[in-house]
Each structure stands twice: as C-alpha cells, then as structure tokens.
Image (cartoon, rainbow, N blue to C red):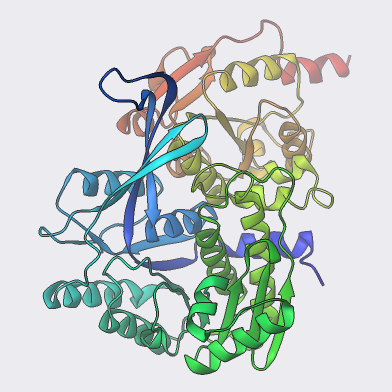
Length: 502
C-alpha cells in the first residue's frame, strides 16, 4: 500500500533533530555557467561568456546536505585538503548547520572538486581535481577515530562511497562495527566492488548497474531484481538491501520478503543527478524516525514495515529531485507537496522551527535571500497584507513567526486572540507572499530567528529604530540587515475589533 500523506507527515516530523553521521568522499561541486555566442579566434572552439559561478556540496557532502534539508542534525566525516576548496566546503556546510568538526585535513591531497561547464542548461564538459588513491595508514587512523567519536551520540550512520580513497576496508569496517555496537542503523551507498568491507550493515543500497557488475547477470524485471537483492543481502550479511533501478523504481528485500516501489517520475523530469543521495539520506533519516515508534524491532535491524515506509518516502523525495536541475536538496514541505491531492497547499506551509530552518538553509545555499518577520496577526486586514507583501519583496523566501494563543494573551490580554492559532496560521499560509509559518510560544521570537538565520529581518516602522527590534544583533552578526516597513495608516486589529463592537 502506498505511503499515505499522514504517514509521510508523521515520519518527516519525527526526522527533526535526529542525529546522523555521514561518512564518505566529500566533494565540492563547482558550476561555471554561461552563454555560447561566438567562436574563439584562437582555435575553432566556442567561447563561454560566464554569467555565474556556483559552488555546492557534492559526494558524501551532498548526502549530508539532503539529510539536513529534512531537518536532521548532521555531522560530516570525510577528507579534505588544506586548500581554498576545503574552506569553501566548511563554509557551505556551516551555512546548512552541518557539523564539520570531524572532517580530516590531508595536506598531501587536494579537496576533491568537480567543475561543470554549463551552457544553456546543458553540461558541456566536466573538469575533475582529485586524488582517488586509498588514503595512507595515518590518515586512515584519523578517519576511524573521527567517525567513532562522531557516532557516540548519533542515531544513524550513512556511508556514501564515491571511490575517492576514503572508504578503505579498515575505515568502512570500523564504522559499521561502531554503529552496530551503538545499536543504530547504518546505510551504505556503495561504489566499486568488492563490498566485503560493508559486511554487517543495516541497509546496502546499490543501483542496478552496480548490482549487475557484482553478480554478473542482468536484472530484467521485478522478479530478477528481488532475486539479485536477496543474493546481495546473503553475500554481504546485510540486514536489508534497497536496490535502486532508475525509472523502474526501488526493490527492497529483508528477512526473505521483498517489495517493489514504482518510480515517481513525472513529465517535468529535468535531471536525475543526486537522486541516489536523496534516496540514501531520506531512507536512513526515515528509518531513524520510525525506530522506537511503531516499529516492533527498533535499533540497527528495523523491520520490513519501517524499511518499506522509509523507502516509499525516499522514492517521493527522489521524484521531486528529478524535476530540478543539479544536485539540489529536497525539503520536507516539498516531499509533502508531492502528495498534494491529500495535503492542502496552505497546510504544507505551516511547519516546525526545524523545518523552517532547513527550508531557509536550502534557500541560502541556492543563493537566495531569506526574510523573517513575526507578529500576532489576529484579524488579517489590509495593513497586514501590505506589510507582508513589502517584506516578501525584500527577498526570495518569507518565514513568518506567529505568536501562539498563550503568547498573544500575555501580550494583548485575556480576551485575545479572537482567532485560534491554527486558524491564524492557516489563513496566513494561504497568502502567496508567505512561504512558511512557524508558531512560537516564547515571549519573543529570538530563538526562532537564531534557527532561521534570516538575511533580512522586518518589523513595522512604528519600532522607529532597528535597536528596538528583537534579534537585530543576531541578524547583523552574520551579515544580515533590519528593515522597518511603513504601516498603512488607520489599519489595525484593535480598530477592527472596536468597530465591530459599535
């Protein structure tokens, strides 16, 4: 039975705050984007007129980015050089609240960087800078120490092997052993065989081509896919195998049973780059979310029910990713939007603080500006509409902190609010200018502001100076600014209430 909207919402909510360790080959993806409009006079080759340089996390760091976008708390373990690209990796990860304290620096190796030259939405050539040889013994020991330390308070382990030298036999085996001893699930996205180093993992997630290469026979349909997945599970002592098959979906095997999940690809298919990372990160996050809830076998060996729901959720996320260009992350609201027949659009905008923080982090990573404002918004009127529109015009994403009923009563007295917090949230979420609504119960929205880290913080011009606005110092400390919005004369909730009582 396909994953229902309420089940997806429950899983995604439970993902929030789960602590995941992502171990593997960290990369920096660079994009040089431009137009081709002439031929070089030096040689018969086209000249790219560059219009944009873009950097994003790649490889294992892309899987970490995806898990962070779902609201999980991420620690990234891997290898970088001592170069400018390493600084960029740290900076990009920090913006997404990904912990990089356990990244290992190797002065003798460059940070792996893949530069894609793109013209008219078409990749022309890729330029790689890397050292894919296995790490030396000293670096290997440092990586093992780093992942063992990171796993001490983790809920799950994701291994993303891109064949760039990090995932040696010793590193992989030590990581899986540490995860099993901690009774937490591990998911492995493997690369080149042999895969003996991954023996004992919770979930092995190869793709069809990798599986065919290991088993030396073709996968032609659901039956042969299930047979292949079961064979891999037995050969590598994996608790479960999740076989990704591109347009043919996913095949899951566990404890002698199998399930097939059709792909959710649409006519809007744009780019499947990064879909594997989306499946891996979402599956592990959902397994961790289900553990201890309705799963009768919590710990590092989840049951088929939890695994199947996790794979269904991952399949949804991958379908969303496939509609977008590049290795971009998918947020929880976007996953729920794929079930829009069951979940109203306005309901998807009402979210927890962690979800809003993840949404804001993704927007910043895409070079977009995040705007934050807050208030009671008890009875929506023209002044509110003007204020929210003006705020949204200052950026690309507007997050609105909304006082709960209890918070409004503290500010306005026992007769307020007139409308309940859920009604106010849904009304505000229905506005095109509002991208996210987050209820907060504190006296001020300071903690919410710190979680969202907006580029622009707005309040009404009646605050007179930025120093009167809660959170202004935090926003300016990371390069943001405060904007005071002119109010519409004579429009207020208090006046609306007074007029209705006359």
